[in-house]
Length: 189
Image (tube, rainbow, N blue to C red; front, side):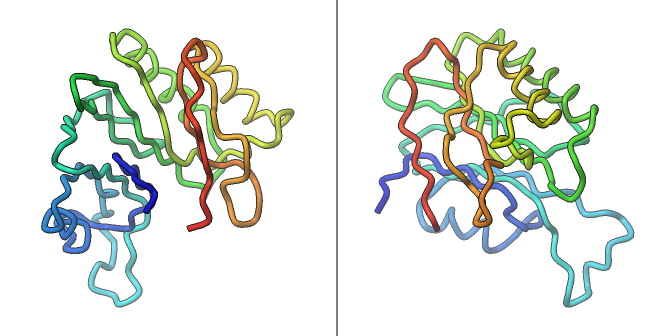
């Protein structure tokens, strides 16, 4: 209905070898995913167990997805992919920073380090996901720190409307400031 070529999913709540996530392959899609690692002491057999977090990128087989290694941060989940279609390519970074705790200095350090690696790649860069920072509050210290980092890499957040059902801008679509702004629509799904 929305003619989506590549779908980025955060908070998939899946585990490795998840049937529901793998079913996308049977439907003719390709999938790259990273489940949130389950803690060794987790009660996986409990009926109330849910593996919160997790990220995935889904695309039709006509679009080539290649997983890229850009580090192993501890403060957020991520998946970095090269997307190729019709002779064009770009790099996309999908991130999910859990909102169960405020962003800490480790997040900003790890995020900036990842951006340093991506900045030297010769392809257009898109970063999307859920950072769980209230970006609609420009004077908040966490928002200022996040914006300072993306600005230092020449990136702009293209999301300009609330992305949470209670209001607030928690999600991002970052692209280079010197490129044409993409059309961004926040849909109430």
